[in-house]
Image (tube, rainbow, N blue to C red):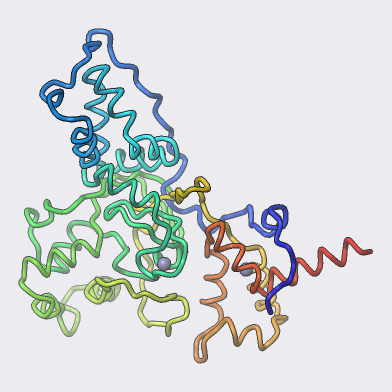
Length: 364
Ligand SMILES: [Zn+2]
Ligand SMILES: [Zn+2]
């Protein structure tokens, strides 16, 4: 039932969850570097051979460079520093997503994405997998925006070790060298399941490995034939499940809310969940938007677990034949953009309940 109320900024803040505990298992708390001054001896005002190019062409070229190349270039001379710092992509990323640059640097993925691509992703907002939700996280190896639920459910957004990738898709080390290889940052992580990883792992994205396997082996059918029909002797059940899921990982976006799809059996926990993703704000004309979680949705989940959610509300939120716990739990990790949140709370049962409760309190 749509609300006829005025949705003020105060109300929006009041309905926003400030505790985002479930979302905390990504790359986080990185220390940001201070900007390095250029050395005195580099105080020449030249960019070498680039000086002969028109300014627009220089800017065009710089946008195609990655941030590692740009940060090297800006140490060359005063002119290079001024030119790089004037670059829109450079300014926007440094100002709004400096931790993303640090994460890409620490995981050694910085050279794989151009400044132009990073800026384009900073200004995008949808998840590339469900195509519906606000993509509040950057998936580092592919430089794409993803939502929490897709990170959890879409196996193409998982990371795996080089040895699993080799074995699962019959690839060699020289094949894998052509992919972005993420060097993990030790720490605790988790997308739904908490993990602690003390050493540095070299990881590749399942989506990129599977695409590589298709290129190497010639076709999707050839790759599918690599999957043994029964687990090879000596292979653990868990590992055979991992192989199966990686083979079945979709290369095309599923384009739907995966929490509302039928449950699949033999799912295995993600060994590296959260280790290749980081929160990234979406930059638009109205500023940087990190996304908001809805308090009302949390209430819906609580009411359901206490058996107090009205049947018609449940029917609306959960497709027929689906166990309610998955889609209702997914509500509690769904982030909304600023505009998306305003639209959402107009129809959110939990938000409506909270607002009605607050209004009643005020009248008393
Ligand atoms: Zn998604
Ligand atoms: Zn809600």
